[in-house]
Image (cartoon, rainbow, N blue to C red; front, top):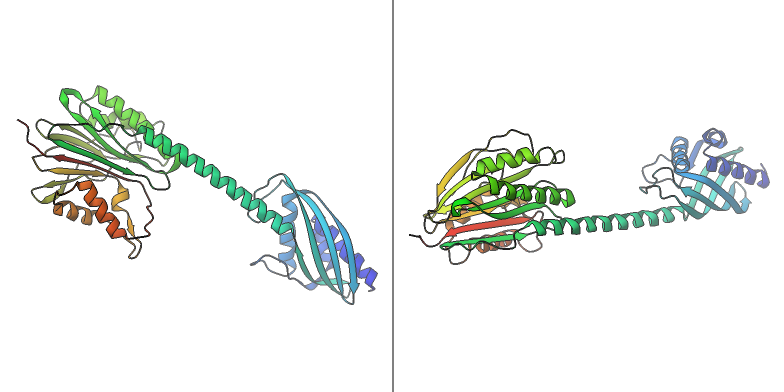
Amino acid sequence: MSAEENKALVRRFMEARAKGDLDAIEEMMAPDFISHGLPPGQQPGREGYKVQVAKSVSAFSDVRFVIEEQVAAGEKVVSRISGRGTHDRKEIMGVAPTGREIASMAIFIHRISGGKIVEEWGAGTGGSELMGQRLEQERIERERVEQELQVARRIQQASLPKIVPQLEGWQIAPFYRPAREVGGDFYDFHLLSEGRVGLVVGDATGKGVPAALVMATTCGMLRLAAQNYSSPAVMLQRVNDALFPYIPTNMFVTCFYGALDPKSGHLSYANAGHNLPCRRHDGQADELRARGMPLGLMPGIAYEEKEAMLETGDSVLFYSDGLVEAHDPRRREMFGFPRLRTLVAEYGEERSLGDYLLEELYSYTGEGWEQEDDITLLTLRRSVSLS
């Protein structure tokens, strides 16, 4: 074939490529055709080339091109091509359709033998344009997520109590440290009948706005229940039944509720699947156990109610799983429940239990630790016996 015939073959080949005419493309390719410009992992032969052409054409509408210049020498034809197309149909190269027109310039080299195209090399600006759109989409998505997290953080913090109850003979100390991603941790205090005080610690599963909304809704329901019921078990049962119809699928809330009589030290409590509070008494640590499923899983659940007496010097730690599930990045081990119980038992009362545990946590995880989940601690200590 002459140089002009080779150039004409390449023009027909590029026209078929722009139209996605796979039959025409196959007709012009040699049986041993090889493309040197396909993405990594794509087969360089005839079938891989046709697959790539089909993907490209199906992602764009109004595809058009112009061969700006062609040079033929021997078996090879070099073509400088400008093209345009609207990316409005399908995802390509990880970029969702934007409806924007993409303009590109490309250089193609084709080797021709026996009237068929044997090899193709190509490089152009189209991939860079798509990568630019991908980076733009990722930036927009990051901004959207950040805005969502800011909204969730405000919802979460607005739901936490602004005032800690001041009870004679008692020390109540909350600590809340959010992770970078918003979770559903919460704590609260309720003024109950007969001078009792309600203590709540919970965690809504998930992250972001959904978890924050579920957490805020649960806090509101618990506050309402505290005005109408005196039993922690009944409160959890009522809140569970009220929450179930509205909670998103696959979400739930763990929650511990305790009702403290500050005069006697009597604590009645119920637990909806939350971490077991750890009590320190006479240098020993035990757990306040009560059975109950998390809130929002199913209606009609009954909750077990238990009682405990807190004597002078006794402390109770209520906490979320951000503490015990913190990982040591060096050994990849969790802080863990056994370690927590041991530390509570060894607590020497020279500083607050919460500060003591946080110091131990930071010492355990070491420098460079990235907090994975919210950490909530609520410590209750009886310091003076009241008459």
